[in-house]
Length: 276
Image (cartoon, rainbow, N blue to C red):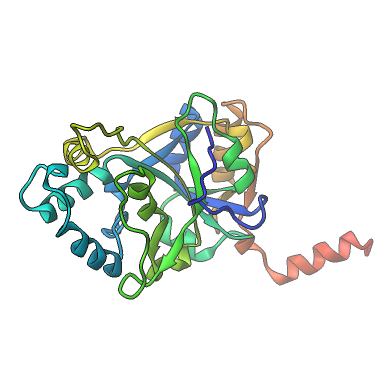
């Protein structure tokens, strides 16, 4: 279920609208299984996901010079950190959403191109309330965009498990157009005196690079479903059929506002004012 954490900063307004663009097969899987897919960080296209900035790396390299050797299982702590990073990316899972007050033509193109798909309209409040008690502890917050050359983020703290998760709420400033809200959880094991965090993460790199489905209440999560610009009436009917066949009749399917034209808008406004 949702669990607040100080590292995960919510939007200023809990009713902030969020959007998830997906192809038709992913949409059908969401509706059929009633689960929201959380990608493993190792599946992300950006190779810097979960990494530290250059400034933080410089600090960490200075720190490991004096690190007690009994904390690591290799004579070269730099190699251990590289291996641990791969294990970390197999242990952190995320569902990414686009924050905006309306749908985005750029996001339609970026995530769907010419493929059939939809956009789910939801909100921050709906997202945090859609998880059940049987789900893992899920944190939700805005992504922070940084200059990865000149800015620093807090480095690893071997007494704080979230110091390893924290880098996943940062991204390079080149991605700030995504305006991302991220729901995230981890499967990091608890350390022991015999097994340090780094050793456990090195072992985790052997895990399969795959995401995790998390059961959700779709009536809570989904406000409306939008179909892409220039979609046919039959495609809208198909989306409505998928929803109604899974007891989601209350979810409205809407045409993209990008299909509107000024003449139709003017006529609609005239009719609403009682003009004949």
